[in-house]
Length: 90
Image (cartoon, rainbow, N blue to C red; front, side, top):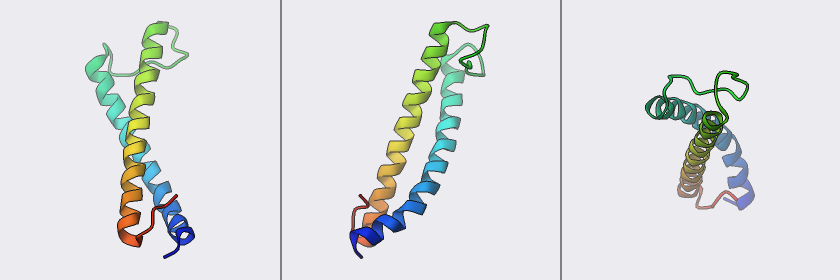
């Protein structure tokens, strides 16, 4: 299978994996926030009752979790495509 074909084959798989990764990352963030924070709900940037520090820490934690989960899922998907096709999806 050519590189173009494996790349095209990976696109829909990558899209589905990305949606799943977002769902998993959202769940993981909520659970981590419950453990780390004083509240069950993470603050929104426009939440008047929350301070700058809490809002920025929540945003940084959420971003780190989303990036970590997305990278792990993307890498796993690429490895899976290589095993199936013999080509790395660039």
